[in-house]
Image (cartoon, rainbow, N blue to C red):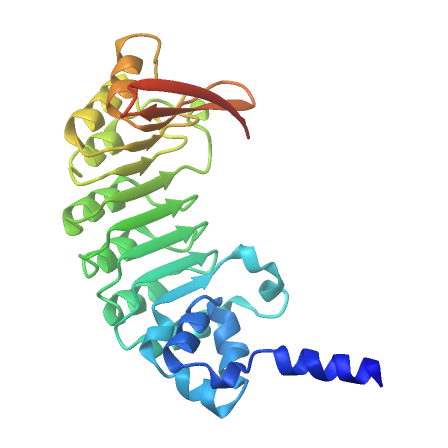
Length: 280
């Protein structure tokens, strides 16, 4: 009898999710992975089905390998269909996409044509996105502020179009698939980045730039506060350039040739630097 009362007490204390105010439910659904919303949440009950029609639920679209269980249940074409569904449901209010592996020119074109207010775009290991496809899409996404392109096959041509098309770009991650010591030196990308004067955060891990390219970035991006140049092994930071970086950049991640890298934090209030070794 006592156990029955305890169980009933626990049931009484459990929140009634269906009784939550609509705005709170929308907020909860916004925090779910896109695939969870499409395949599960919207099928919970008629109320949630109706709430999932609210474009605010679809402000963000996230389909990446952090949810590996989905890749055992869905083939890439199914995931692309889910992307299309999410874009359609957003009714133009989509502002943030995070796509891994399944990105293609056609998918990016569909997003750019139906989500022109996009602010954040993350593309990781999307080998099927070409320079041409990326450039055509980015020209329609002029409000982008945060772009992460990691381990894709995109070249300086895409970077140049991005810089010209997105005047409000504040954060850029353009990471290579291979460390720069495996390749020659090339400052072309650095000189393009140097024209992006609104940048406050830049991560170019594995880039082939030299000291000249880094100086161009420091000169051309006066608002830059965070800079990641890990695995940029063609840089010589033994002299004045290192001092310049320490003076100008608050959050600086430097290249080293072993399993550790150093994270240099600049404290503008106390004018001191702390050097912390972080194990990769």
